[in-house]
Image (cartoon, rainbow, N blue to C red; front, top):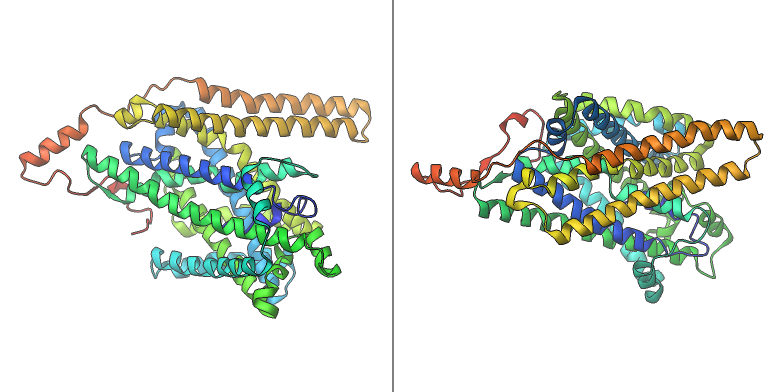
Length: 475
């Protein structure tokens, strides 16, 4: 569930309450495609994305990709830190900056619950988030959003209003997080997949079904969140107090949206659900960080140390912004962090698309021509939107700021080369020819013949990666 979605709706609620729905739909469809590609890559090669990058690219490129991946994990942890601080503010009425300082307690809570098993922890968090979802669905039945407008928002692309383009980019970054590509390619290695061709195909199909179900549920929840928010804030009989909140909608001020269902207890339930959503982000970031460090650098860290390191780095900007800008500034930092994720997406997406479409990596299991065309089209579209927004925003700022001309020239001399530095690695990753072969022809047939000669079932499940046993995986 994308709880941070409420932070992206503020600029558009008053005039265009449903216009970001199509961004959510496209983002989740693309997330389904690339997550399934990441899972297929892990199943077929027996290696996850970070390991294949280390074997394929020169050391300097590998280190740069590792740094960018770590920055993505930290950027994804910033909303979790702020969201947890907002939850503490709602539940215990403490200042946001104090909540940021004690977000380490959420790490201790996570590690304490880990001893009961990862699946039990995931079940607990899922139940808390589904309580939040049930509240929004209940509110949905009360406010009755206009179905025609909701459908237009889903299928008619438009971006109107101040800051709509930037918020759409940030929303894509929060839906398609680059570090999740490393995670999905690695988590499948914890499953026991039959070594035969049929077993690999079945595993790829089942992983697609699993991701599809999860993302479909996420789509329904996000539609409910946007529909409730848009209908309540666009209502003609909105009270002055609620109208003020809609005009400056933030994560810590959105509990009023559930008053019809929960009454006075809306802030408590909302705070608990916000805390639960933040913890689900913590789990994703912790696992991703472990696989990223192990894959790129062949270094393993204990989960508590890995989590503490990422959290400590994420707390610093969150604390400064929350002290200076308060709740509004902290909410804006969520959008900035999500935009960083969107701009970093090509550096995980392009290697994934190239590897999963390569015969030397995937053999006969490589992507079909339809998947290749569609995925590259969406990937290049996101890269193009990012570059368009970055260039137009910077040029607009240069034109309308109050700095003297020589200062604008100096800033332009510094920033435009940085844009070029961003484009050149994207071009390098796109057009560089793969040199490392990870798929061995007839390997599956050889495994089957060996199993048959030994009198074993050729589809007997065997774990691919015993060497990752020290990284805690869901069982």
